[in-house]
Length: 229
Ligand SMILES: *Cc1c(COP(=O)(O)O)cnc(C)c1O
Image (tube, rainbow, N blue to C red; front, side, top):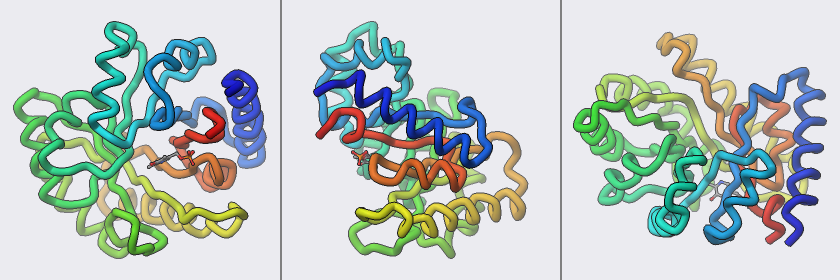
């Protein structure tokens, strides 16, 4: 695995996509999705300026955080996998942003933890734009109502939307998925006036991040293109 080469080539492609869209590098957060690798790789990520980590399994993430010790505080931790209600508390305590809020009872549990620790837990609403049955997330036409429900919860901070596009060889075919998420994001903004905390669009993975950036992604989640798996 040549981490350096991979990261340089991802960054070059990201820069091209940003330039094509007339966007600034500061508008984008690159998550290194580390689900494929163990804690020994993390230090090297820092040397390449990657400080934001995406993990999709709580137990794996906890293991890596423990192995990292003090070093774990150098990173921001994003939970991107589907979250079981009985693991919500641990996730709220260990992660800086949860990308996968997809149901009301999970929102309620997270909010209670937030109230206890006096911190509004930052979350993104996961949307199943493509409608694939295997994917988690709120249906597009329910996003507004869902947002209206969770904005009342005092221990949560709803910061935006997340989606996973279907896997495809040609990323152009999923452009409409990203465009739709952006549209839903703008719709919430126009309808509910959420203020500046409503600001994230988490979309784009190794296969399709350039297209997602062109369509307005503020967070891309990249695993295999970085780790070469
Ligand atoms: C694994 C994963 C990614 C990264 O996928 P790659 O194709 O390896 O870049 C992004 N988001 C989620 C939710 C994932 O589970």
